[in-house]
Amino acid sequence: METSDIIDSIRNGNQATRDEIVKLLSAQGRDRDELFAEAREVRDRQFGDRVFAYGFVYFSTYCHNNCTFCYFRKSNSIDRYRKTPEEIIATAADLKDAGIDLVDLTMGEDDQMYKDNCAELLDIISGVRKLGISIMVSPGAVGKDAMRPIKEAGADFFAVYQETHNRDLYAKLRLNQDYDFRYNQRVWAREAGLLTEDGMMVGLGETMEDRADSILMMGEEKCEQIRCMTFVPQAGTPLQNLEPMDSEMELKSIAVMRLLFPDRFIPATLDVEGVQGMKSRLDAGASTITSIIVPHKHFAGVAQPEKDIESGVRSVQHVYDLVEDMGKKIATQNEFRHAIEPLEARIRPKD
Ligand code: SAM
Ligand code: MD0
Ligand code: SF4
Image: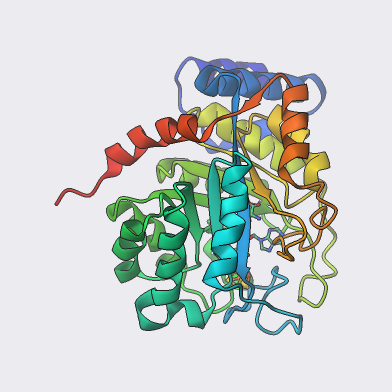
């Protein structure tokens, strides 16, 4: 089948096969333009002229894991920080005042946050919740028992990315981390009434078929948010010399996810290419700008620990202006709550 036939078939409500997804991910020239145009149309039908904006608070860069791709892996000797609850709440308040829709509270797998049944983590979540802003937590793999308290403390979303759904590749990336335990985080989070996010990375030696499988599996899993990020090599890590890919595969993955799963939130992350990369991701059908960071507070990004942060280029006003230039508007916090409340009602635990 030609690319345009596959797009037609999906538009007519047919499920895409793995081979068809591989074909879409390989689209070039006019086929590629058609894929992206369709993705924008599907996104606009779902969300109108609204784009969602998430602020990123990487509040502890301590980690007991050794993921081969990550700058913050335990064996990397880098300067680390752990922000106090007060600093985190003040940063979240800045994001709220700037009109950001959600605060993503992210950490390395920091044992201090897990001890005493995640007391400090829960304290941070409930402190931020009191500000009246929506919350995503990205605390790594915490286990089943932590999910209810995380929900009750006030989190809306639980994010934990599988990175790849090829178990052999996973084992080479997330060293000594059980695949199923990580996968089950999202199952348990959902059972506790949390919205979930899964994610894939590209540029780590995966095949086209692996990428197609990740897209299919993320869709089947019914996560409300799904993402793709391009691997960015990090100094001091085992993969530091891996030849980096450009963002083309990430963009095509965004477009394919949008066609297949029209109603999901799909990030345009600023963490891979900074603000310069925002427009191309929105043009591929993304709905949600993620990784907006408050400048001058010394927070790190993930894939780009320093990119555009202290200069303020990744900050809110700049992002808003660019979004308006595209004829779009950042959703108000109320509009965002209205978008997620029906989703939360759908998964509310029944007891
Ligand atoms: N520690 C938690 C965890 O691993 O789930 C949350 C933070 S972790 C740094 C968040 C995500 O950042 C990872 O799941 C991975 O997808 C992404 N990431 C980390 N290093 C990256 C890199 N070098 N390039 C691209 N994405 C990266
Ligand atoms: C982002 N830097 O959205 C963040 C991060 C964790 N939930 C998200 C990878 O790009
Ligand atoms: Fe730690 Fe997360 Fe980085 Fe893995 S990806 S080393 S768990 S911070």
